Amino acid sequence: MPSYKNRQCHFCKSDINFIDYKNVSLLEKFMSQYNKIVPKYYTGTCLKHQKKVSNAIKNAREMALIPYTPQ
Image 1 (cartoon, helix red, strand yellow):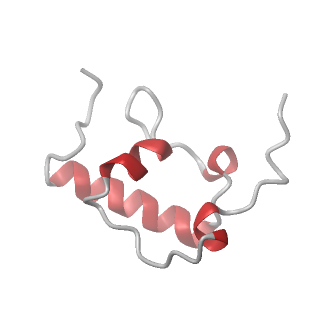
Image 2 (cartoon, helix red, strand yellow):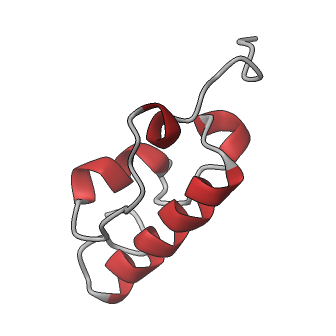
Image 3 (cartoon, rainbow, N blue to C red):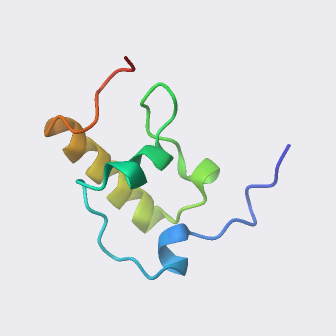
């Protein structure tokens, strides 16, 4: 079983403050194969950026850029 505690936030490390809902390729990295939002203890993001990622995914779903269910 891999250790998830040693991960560092991708967005803090890259100094990214704004997560765009139109960047679908980035958002798909934080979704499971069933199009569910992956929890922060799997992705390694901090709480602040995890909330921004989840809001961006929800906005992208509203704008029909990402499907709600797998195809």
